[in-house]
Image (tube, rainbow over all chains, first blue to last red; front, top):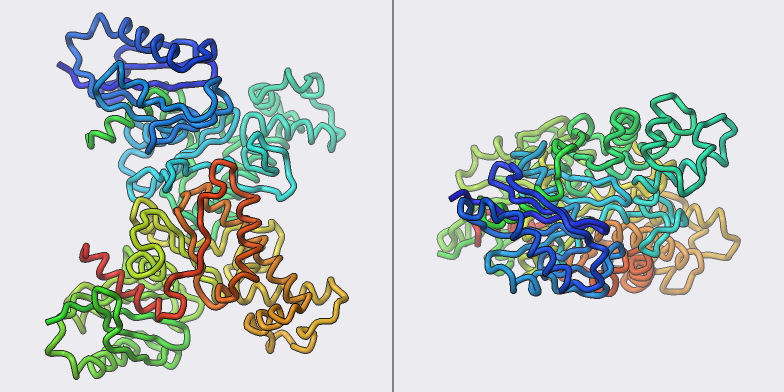
Length: 319
Length: 319
């Protein structure tokens, strides 16, 4: 019997799951839609059935130790998902409690960026590190902060929302209701907003002028940057400058050994990492300079969310 | 035999020490000058002699468990004091190592704000809290951050420098060499700088116009505020606005149960706390609102630095 855990990544559109062993190998995987279920009870039933179906062929060979979920606005302490903007289940959803009817092994939830950070520590570039930060650059900006070898959940279970530290007092409107939050600048959506600002401010020719707001994506900005499009290059520089400065502030807080960038935008590589590193070093307190690495996630092309969600259980079991 | 520890607060001008029991009672105390010693070896000899002299009358009744030091730029991991601007001993001073010749019980160092935070947790308002932050508002702004019940030292032992997060990209020159650091706004020195800016911007009559830059102190600004001096009131509002916003960013990081403000400027009470709280709540991510307390230190009038330095040893002993 092989000890395994189930990792589930609950996204706004799809939920992916995998059966993961202690080394991070995904033995079996699958997915179900998320947004077709108005009701979380129906969703859980469908998820349970999909998992059971997927594991049927190997069921006699595995010993399932627990199930870990990564989800937006998930609360580790309470096992709840609370007011997640991208999910249809409103208010406070007692997710772990409700799921107990299917399994009696440990059921643990955390937010998706925390799950990514735990995965990075167990399987990725942060292996062996006691102090590190993972930043996820997707539609928004998520963060998972590990200090003294432990995830920082805060007293209420919602810590690690660096996407909402302030860049400009009266800056861009954020989905959270505030103005000037970091994720309105440093995220796939943020860089798109930046391009529109630059298309206004600059007069240079740019292939990005052909797209309307719905058509433009961070991938298109990246591809244009590779062709030396001046607006695209400027957009990455602007984004990197802001993110680098805010990561320097994060160092003043917890002084990690390394900061890992994960997600679509992080795949841009040096066109993004170079301005980040320059701004980061310039904004660091001198005692921190040239000590702290900014790295792409070591799990960039893997199903990190599922691995992270499964790592949550391994961590819980003290393995 | 009563178990006690020695707490030492190394300040730029004076070093205070005390023999402290498990409950935080200071049985004996004393002090020696700091800045008259060009050499740390001479300083340590003098400190040792002063401690021995002070404890002589009670020596047969006590069992000394260790000595804890709070000092600027002290490194907990290495037992060093590194490039402290306010001390005469330059470069990297191997303080704990050097002091071993006097005592063979545990010798532990941390920076003064971390010591204050540990003291707040053991003896003050943070008793029983697992997640809290202490901000010291003195000449500069120091911070001690506790998460998951542990002080955050970071991978290099220098974490928790919230005085150097950025308020304005091209703001006020800071002692650290950067521009726009928080402590250039929110500290006794910061509010004085703010008054000079306001004396320029405003035309109101103000008793603060009679002071030159050397004469003005944060106490005088506070006293003027109590008399409704418009410049003084505006200075506290400006300071509170900035500090409140940056404390909101700190919540996005570690979500403490409470933030304690300690030190001279924090004694100003509501004239400072009111704008801090307003700006804090307005800048918090909605999920954090009306949950997190901003409080004056529970040890405000006590010798917190000595208590904190002693608490460092109790903590070390797991008591």
